[in-house]
Length: 234
Image (cartoon, rainbow, N blue to C red; front, side, top):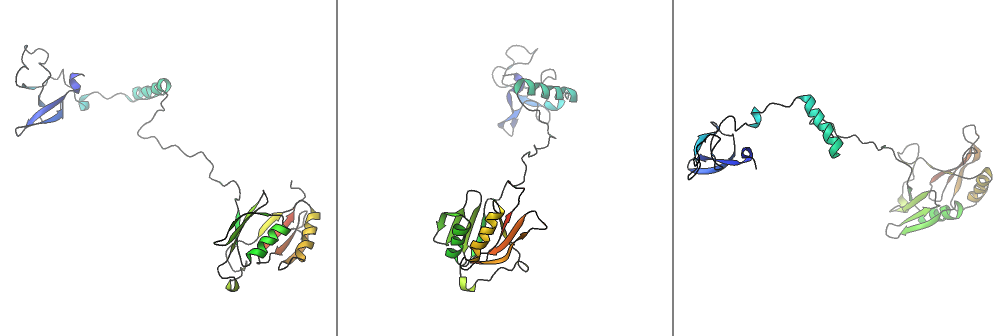
């Protein structure tokens, strides 16, 4: 280790304590390493020798000449090239997140229902869903058709449940499901019209002038569901 990095001690009130070389009010220190350049041999032998450090031997960090800015920048660039390190400065900003913060798709839609069995039967028997899970404690039913995922949750007190009013309450206005063709839309209209507890809000008609056609129905729990076919959709 270099002599400048050696830890020296300063006597304070009869006790020795470590202090970096060059510190202290008058730079007086004990130097157990040995004599300075030019001192006679044996000067540091025996008890530690009290002396002032020569300016040619000890240079504190504050006394060192500052590295020019362009040299510091060059060192950072060279370290990034040869060491694989990215140049960092004390004023560098944290990296910005490049990942888009938008969502990719709807994962599922959950409904509160008054008649869990009837609503589940409507989604399974009429709309072609299948039950992929069931929670008997809530109770709740989880339905899927490999393209959409719907969860049905029975309310705590079905006889006293308050029906949702889309014009007065904040919440889900309706669920819209697409069908493959106009023929399928007409067939569903006929099927729903005869399903117990379900009702037709309006029959198939042009949606906002077409070419799409849609209809609005209610399941046995009163859920508002739109069924629509758009000819230009795949």
